[in-house]
Image (cartoon, rainbow, N blue to C red; front, side, top):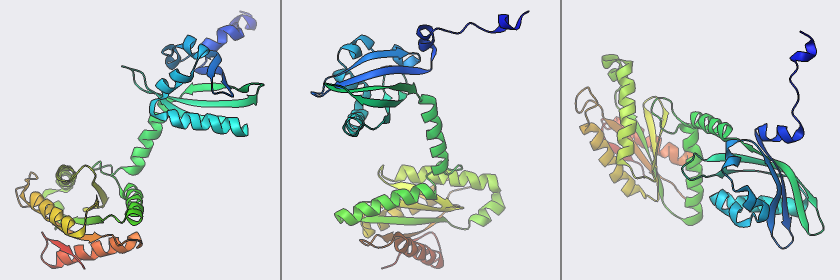
Length: 299
């Protein structure tokens, strides 16, 4: 067979566009704010669900409906690109009724016209890419054993709350939790049972806390609970309630076999976070010295 017979016939431009994994578009915005898509062609599942004739006629209202909560971000990107003649680069979620949300990436170059600005560019469905990014981000922020936030995620959250506390003068407290005699528990019941205790502890702690609180695993058998809008005395009461609930819970090795020592501390406006964490850690050490299965705070 001749070699030429094995080469597929190339698509013409008109036949090729519907097969590309994205959308080629021309977008126009007049100086008075009217928007439309003079050209919009391509492939992909998302485009099939869009009212293209409406976008060709008048895109303003439909863009707002399609982009939902991302609409202000999209309009800001368009305005910035139009004002400075910079490339338009953004992404947004395209929510469809009864369909999974699609993430769309936009890349377009602007050019001035007599009555406005015209962009020539592409939109790509990046739903799978975003899902992978979210999966990797979760891996970076999550403790694999308990499913709780890890130290990295905790410190980002705590830094944000401390900033709010300083700005608004609102209280912020933390608990440092440590499972008493965890090594002995592992030695007696095995590491698989020890892992099970940590998993159950994570679940029980989340159930006992408020939705605005965060519990994170620092490592080993040590955890931290962050309590926004909570002064020290209220934190102490919550910690004692948690300590009692854990001591009363049967982790599969008998009630009372798992107990917690807890140290609590309150954020002092403007102080370095490490100072508050050190106070909570010292209070935890004090609880251990006082016989464990108790809550301690330092003035």
